[in-house]
Amino acid sequence: MRGRALLILGALLVAALGWSYAVATATPVVRRAAIPLRDWPPGAPALRVVLISDVHVAGPDMPPARLSRIVEQINALRPDLVLIAGDFISDKRVATRHYSMAEAIRPLEKLKTRLGTAAVLGNHDYWSDAPGAIAALRAAGVTLLSNDARRFGPLVAGGLDDDFTDHSDLPRAIERLMRLPGPKLLLSHSPDPFPDVPEDIPLTLAGHTHCGQIRVPLIGAVVTASRHGRRYACGLIREDGKTLIVTAGLGTSGLPFRLGAVPDLWLLTIGPVRPDAAR
Image (cartoon, rainbow, N blue to C red; front, side, top):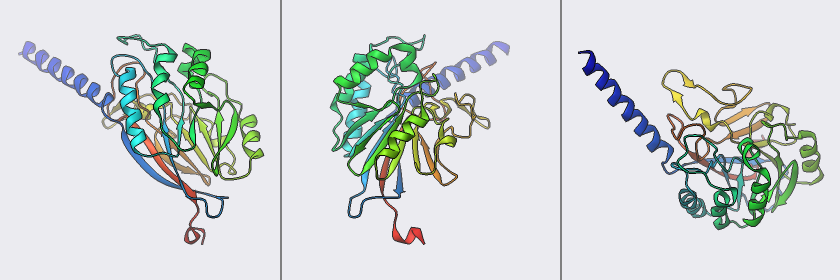
């Protein structure tokens, strides 16, 4: 009887691992949101902005070939701008193959946008090869926003360097953002700086948490890698007149499994505040 119970438990464990791997390698879910921003130039059309994060290129779950397929998925959304919230590579010990930064980032060369692609670095990029990431992003035509800001059409996007590894400089990033007139957003690998972002920057985009990656039924995310716990772990959060969007990311960290936290990307329609919403 005991042997049969162990066999059943073993079969259930194998099935759970197989399911979690299938979820981790599934086509990312496209989540959508319309975000109105103040100071939108009169007559300027809304922008289609794609947010991705935590690519974590490594075998078996995220080889460069899979990232290339995701790039095709993004291109089919016809984005004006793509924003990438860091962690391009995975250094997990159970990986079947590790790739260089150049190999990991090269598929991003194929992104097709009207206004460009911008990114910030994440903690795994600093732990692995930050200079290699910077060089590979430059080669791929991706603008690196390291505590800096740039204009993309009517939109001003600031980038906060990685907070988790103490490379962020929020006052400098804010100063660079405020130099440029127009509607503003901040791209950050981690959501943790969000409470300190002023209301003048109404939208923050982030990743890092993987939405928990493993969310146990009835318990939720076991780990969020955030000093705020589950407060900013996932999704669209509105707080103190500001909006935060945290993507679950594309790849995995630690183990090549996801449970209750499917890979996703966000398609944001960012444009003017509707007159009726201002009343």
